[in-house]
Length: 89
Length: 398
View (cartoon, rainbow over the protein chains, first blue to last red):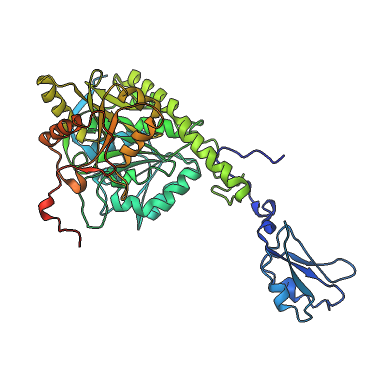
């Protein structure tokens, strides 16, 4: 059950984390960690800040709550480690 | 307390009423299209008669944005504009309503471009009916004076929290001197206490107004806005009742019925032209004709049940209005018809009249009553009827 709205529709600050914009995505990036060379270019280029380094073993992970599926990571990865898979609902 | 009955310009009657309501921020674009309302208010501020921040801006878009911000910060706010100025505010006015900010705006009703025309009709404010602003129309300077504290009171009611527009006809009311009984400061203070916002901008407790809403909440938030506009109706009625008791007036909140109780043919109209229509009704009544006027005061929310009650007994209702939805008919006429959809009711005719300052004199109104009677029991035409159209200057369709 979602929280009730308030009459003026005001929100607390930092509303972005609460707004799971990943729902907009039509394609999702899927990373093949065997191809990843840990250059982390994708982390720098992701406009949503939705890619982060995996702790300890390295490599990357995508936060699908916020990834909008723009595909910049897949386009820019020098190893072609990302594939864009259709989002199924 | 002695009532201060005096002869004032319509714009000054508004400015004086707004001063008595003690607004804390007024913002306006100071030149054409504008009225003396904000000119008078800026002088009051400069002369120390009104403690208020007066912000001159570079456009009406900016003026509306300033009052939006000020209202979100929790103070009583006011602005005034007209025609193209209102249109330049359009985007911000939807934001104000969506953010549920209780801003009071006076609209001097004037025609919209093109062609350029500075005179009176009501196309400007009627075009804004869908935004979520409450809308009240005035017949004379006394009404527009009196409606200012009512407007603030309704808008700021914590159960309402909506912006409100009061309308006065450009030039016909804004620039005309009339006797007006000015309100007393003590009575206004007792009727309209200081504004207490439910939510406001506060650096200690930050909030976002008008935040992003996805499809999973936007639909519900718009539902709530419409629920609030609909729900304002009894609050408006209560505010008028308390005003009448406090100031000794006799306003019906939604519409004024003039000699309409046994009328077979009614005109429904709004604004200053109602004065002319009353004269026409009086003349026709002396000839024994059963005619009357329903003066619509509140256009949003639309008082559908009250419209049915007021118009039901008549055979024909001619809606005479100074606006049109291009490709349809007069906008108020469509609204009146909607009140009767699925009910038996009178034949409702749409008369488009007096655009761009075209005078609507008593003989024209009498002609409307005469023509309207002939539509008794018949289906109204699909097209609107244009009052006083000079067909001699209109070229044939090419």
